[in-house]
Structures are given as structure tokens and as C-alpha cells.
Length: 116
Length: 113
Image (cartoon, rainbow over all chains, first blue to last red; front, top):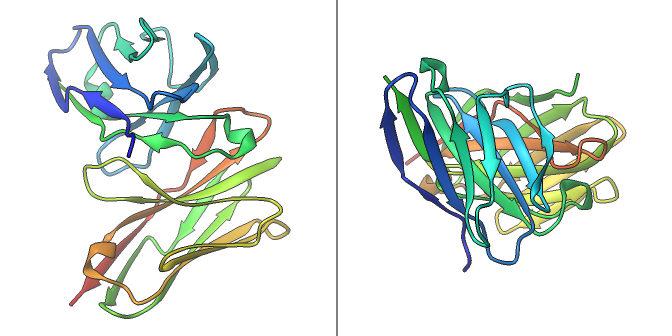
């Protein structure tokens, strides 16, 4: 069964460093998402991406964050200058269609980011 | 402000028993409601998805209901198994915010032998 994959599974970085989290969505999906989950808290929406541009973003997704689809398979989340509060599990998800058409979102296993 | 409230926050049941989890939402206008199961340290896995025209949907031992008038949903788990121990998350999407979903805090279910 097709699945969303994410690398690395765990990333440790020092405050102020740039990190890139990578995701490979399911191949025929057109909509891509990033979410984060701080330990012990609920999942929070960061950004959605369609047709090579951001379609929606939350207030969390400030200028320190960017997303890119550098080729036909990868979808990346970049944090330019990490802060301690960026420590969280980051989930990538993909779907065939937008939420408004109620298509399923399939989540990856997550990347645990630890900022020291 | 769009909100999703889940209850109870946590629940402990014995293996083989049934349970029902609740979700109330204020997301408007409503597009769809999804229930996810999330094991510790893993990504959420979809259980059911319902639009406003659906009031019940089953997936094996999981049955979700939706009352769009009262903005309430429930997830019923029958004949619980130890592997059902997880967090169950209610997620509601609005069709004015394409791609943006509001997550509940989840209900942590523990099934004991």
C-alpha cells in the first residue's frame, strides 16, 4: 500500500541552525501538508501546498518557515534559524484532493526535531 | 474562532468492552469531519471521514456518527482490543479554508486486559 515517507526520523540541531525536513508524498497525490505536534500537545496545521504554491498557512508558519517541491517526488519544510520552541514532531501529509472535497489525508511517520 | 472539543480527555476500559468518544465543534461552514487514531510517536491514521450529508460511517469495529445540526460527532469502538490503546483525534475542516483543518486535543484510550 502506498505511504508517505519522511526523513530523517530524528533530527537534532543547535539553536540558530537551518534544518530541512524531507517528505515523499504518495505519488498520485496533488495536495501536500505540513503539521507539527509539540510533545504532549495536539497536532497543529502549518501549511498546505498545491500546484507549486502555498494554498493556506497558519499563523505559526512565519518567515522562518518555507516549503518547496524541488522535484517531482520530494516536498520539503525548511526552518531557517531554529529556536528552542521549534522542537516538535513534524508530520507531512498528502491527499488526492482538497479537504473541501473530503478526500483523505495520509500522514507520514513524522520527523522528531530537537533543538538544543 | 474554529474549535474542536473532545471528551473525555482520557479513558480506561477493559478488553472486550465498548466505548464512545465525543467530539463537539464550532467550525463553520462545515466541510468534513475525520477521526484519526494516533499511536504514541507515530503519525495519525484515518479511521473515518464524513461530510454533512452522512450521519454514520463504519470501519470495522469503529463507528462514527455525525449530527451536523448540533455540531457533534461520536466514535464508538466495539469489542475493544489491547491494540486499540492510542489517542483518538477528531479533525474538522471548513470549506472556506481549503487545506486547513482544526484538530481536537484527542482522547487517550487505554485498554487493559
